[in-house]
Amino acid sequence: MPTMDILAAFSTEPPPQDFILPGFLAGTVGALIAPGSTGKSMLALQLACAIASDQPQANTTGLDIPRHGGVLYLNLEDPPGEIQRRLHALGSRFDLLTRESIADSLTLSARMGVATDIMNRQFMRTLLKAAAGQRLIIIDTLSRCHGLDENDNGAMSRLVARLEHVVRESGAGLLYLHHTSKAAALAGQGNLAQAARGASALIDNARWCGNLMKMTPEEATALTQGSGLPIGEKRRGFFVKYEIGKQNYGQVQQSQWYERADGGILKPVTLDGTSKKSSAVKKSEWK
Image 1 (cartoon, rainbow, N blue to C red):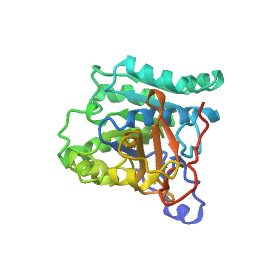
Image 2 (image 1 turned 60 degrees about the horizontal axis):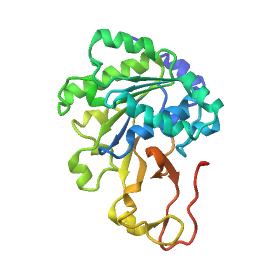
Image 3 (image 1 turned 135 degrees about the vertical axis):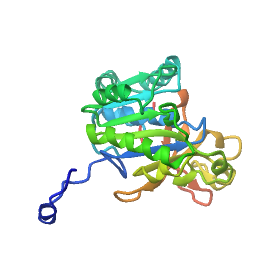
């Protein structure tokens, strides 16, 4: 059983916290949850590019990326052609140096239809080998990497423990994508950590949870994109909000609005209340 040197811990300055994303600590398991067709896979791909490359163009998320490193992205639900469409849309915004920098550090495995069971020992050995030296591992989506009962707390605790074994062995952070429950989405509670579908252990045992939510009719009435006029019902489908639903480490961060751009890319924007006259501010450069 590994033990800590208590006396040394009392007297030795600990290393600074190493965050992959605001609040998401390296060496821990985090979740990104959202209803279907919200854009979580695109946001995950944008995050993967931003973390893989230190070129400024690579960060299209508007979020702070403290450090960069290798990213292993397992996409378990989309066909290769659709993944290529997303990459092509992002690549159209990058210069050659940025493209090459991302390609050098991002490993993307298109695994739709390929047996992927993280509870399987042989696959776990393969995953640990691929995860060595990576800064972030992304599993998209969690429900496709196991055959357990999603509503069983004991089973989901074992699943998260398996993910924790990966991060302990590799030192990477592991971000899994998961769906919001229909009940939480209909009740307008998509910003809560417990909005995740299935057993509560999925989020209770994770150290961080980001939520991606569609704009509500009330928000479409109350918010404007610089013109002073409400977003309105016709345009609200173009906007989603990222918010941290659970955070065990670091300071709490503000939410971030995104507007869907060409190719499904989520473009960071600032939305004001309709009573304000200040204009929207883009948080990254766009062509």
